[in-house]
Amino acid sequence: MSLRSKPVNNGEPQAFPRIIQGGMGVAVSSWKLARAVAEGGQLGVVSGTALDAVLIRRLELGDPDGSLRQAFDEFPFPEIANRVWGKYYVAGGKPADDPFSPIMALSESPKREHVERVVLANFAEVFLAKRGHQGAIGINLLEKIQAPTLASLYGAMLADVDYVLMGAGIPKSIPGVLDRFADGEPASLPLFVEGAEAGEVHCIEFSPELFTSGEVPWLRRPRFLAIVSSATLATMLSRKSNGQVDGFIVEGHKAGGHNAPPRGGVQLNALREPVYGPRDEVDLAAFRNLGLPFWLAGSYGSAEHLKEALQAGATGIQVGTAFAFCDESGIDPGIKLEVISMSVQGKTRVHTDPLASPTGFPFKVLELSGTMSEQELVEARTRCCDLGYLRQPYQRADGRIGWRCPGEPVDQYVRKGGNLADTEGRKCICNGLMATVGLAQCHQGQRELPIVTCGNDVANIWRFLPSQLATSYSAKDVINHLLTCPAEREEPAAVQVG
Image: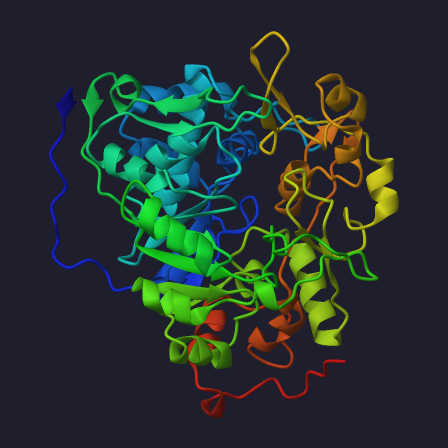
């Protein structure tokens, strides 16, 4: 194993930020948004979900701003970058009605070319987010999406990512992975396989030496922040993780995307939403007693809530929804304009759907015309699973590992041994989130429709408009608003919220 020079320690690590921008959706938290937030002195975060598919689709659109070409030129293994570019880049972009190339998520034993795509995609996103400033950049990954995690982390670390944020599960093995990759060592993660025999162990593995053909670089270990919903989980992670946990993001049920289910079992209200109660309240004293930095998230997107969080002993807040609809986010501009208008008029409605996500976690869906929030559009869609990031591995009758998703065609799921009841109410989150950022797939003339997820605070995003005549706002507007004392700030007074 030949290691390149070890990175120079430039002194004290960066101070922890007051504001963490949430890692949202698929390419909602794009490199452009993360860079804008980091330039504002806060922690910018890119979403690591489905980045390989995002990369391929951007290439097939012709890399219109030339940013991917710049990132590819900086990738330390040019033969890999050249292979991917040569296979997927379409000069001038593909015809609008042509489908994107089919890209399935990694399986337990992926081909090398698939691993290369994941590493390169994560490198490119982090590299572009870090370019041109001295601020901090993080990457957000989901524990629930297991197979690409190691390749994603390695790609992000090749680009010198500053933070790794991870939730949607119990990421107790991730700190050790970061340690091993920093030293050029191979790493593995346990793969949960439904139906596996007791004591049977399945793993996903990644070897830096094999990937780099022996030219393994020393890498800087990023800080690790676990996204949790309770002090109980945070305590377990702080004690039983296989490496250092540097802090926690405490995400409440008002946050967008996937939410933790209510403790003590799921009960639904009249709107068929999960009912959260006193057991789901955050035990702030327990977090303070852990002695690690923590940030509060889930409808904390205001200066008042930042002040409350700091007074409660938190290091700061994580803010997602406010940034999701700012100029630099990846959401389709038409959707952003419509949602901001709805907020101004007081007409936003977010539904916590207990069935939409194939993961089984409650999932926030913004009710918006022309999107998968409308049941008739869901029913009109032909089910398919051509991205597969939310597939789960299961033990087949022949002993091999298979993959299935409750959002795939019902007959296929049942044929794979899945429970018919698990398919009821499921939506294709993967395709819906791709469509939300302008990367919708076309299937035989049928274009996938968006699904917009956000937190309850979408009702208040009108507050970030810089004037009463404005119809949009920037990441800088959000940061300035959050850091400005209300007494010093002029609200757009003419905006009326019902």
